[in-house]
Length: 152
View 1: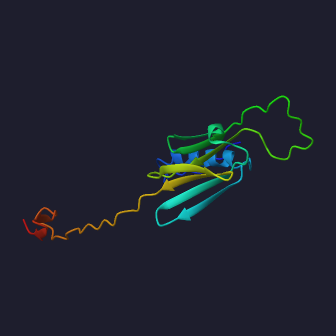
View 2 (view 1 turned 90 degrees about the horizontal axis):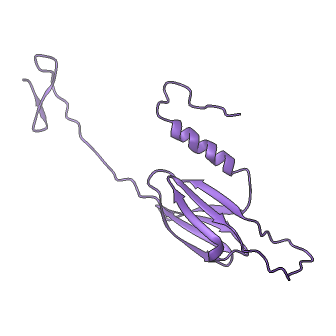
View 3 (view 1 turned 90 degrees about the vertical axis):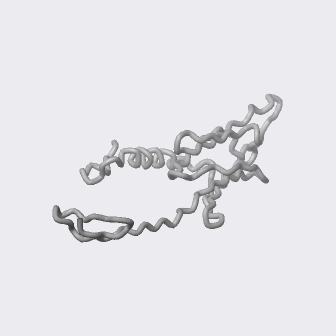
């Protein structure tokens, strides 16, 4: 059952946000593999997944629109291997993260069973715009000349 959150006419154009929230809630139901998200510096983020037993060849990272998708699939074990206990997960996984507008994937590395995906978020530019205030002209519209308002 889907509950629509943005049904008010005041929330025009938020359909994509509702779809992202739906996708995020579907992805959070499975806890494998565990992951961390940390802030690195003023504009950097790092996603770290615990992928013990996976090699670089077993992992795939793609960016599909505004979604970062990380997939893992291990090669089949040799048929002559006999496990008395198998506690290390060897299942395939897919973990997706919804990225905000402007976030870019900087790179990825695999170190000691941890997959690190570095993201960069551009810092917002300080934009200040001065709006001149004018006096209304005869027709009620202010006349602005070279940034200064005058009566027309």
